[in-house]
Image (cartoon, rainbow, N blue to C red; front, side):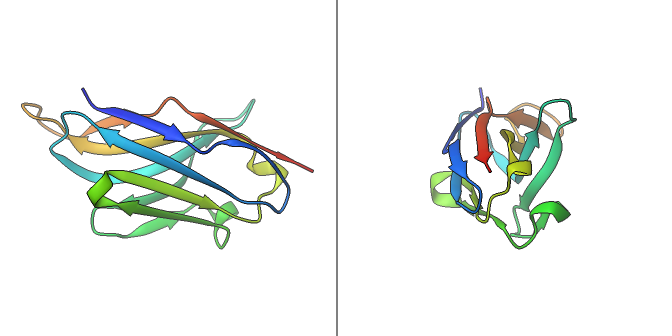
Length: 121
């Protein structure tokens, strides 16, 4: 079973920084991409940042220039460095992995439990 364990969320003042981490473990053969999503109260879940196995990245416009997604392949870990945080960044942040399990055809999608990020004014 593939598991995603997140950490790094918390309460921070506007303008501050946080670094989220997500460690991937379990019966995964290949990871095609990893990403971070967020969901604020009353809003749908949205993609924040994504990084492919080849290292390509993309970001939602609202976080460009402030957030950086990266990965450590040796540790099976993906990070989200968040700087210049704004109150509108407040949300539950979820780690996502697009990967392949043994004996399973096609891409599987896995989710972390979510970690709360709260940015105060």
